[in-house]
Image (cartoon, rainbow, N blue to C red):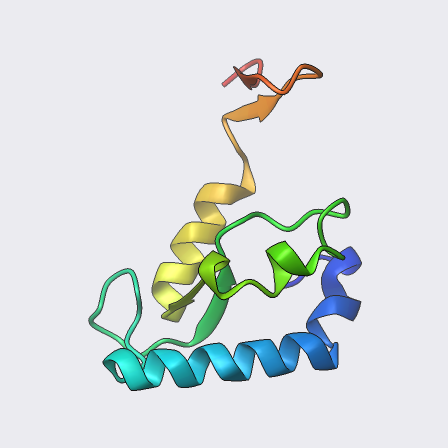
Length: 102
């Protein structure tokens, strides 16, 4: 489920057009199969870059087909579960560092 800050984006005409076009491309390429497992039909257009309040209005991230994947519900849930509590974060200098206590 979309986080509150992302709801306006996911309800936007720009996203709906982008999503529809991406799905059509995937259907033409491989019948719309999940890009991860390849066993089930795609169900969700997933952003490969984690959307944040800082990048949600950047169309180079949010509407870029190169940063999207068409995935089945099972694979999407696994991705979201893995991303829910990251083990690393970026410090003030932009360096990847482990999150304390994990």
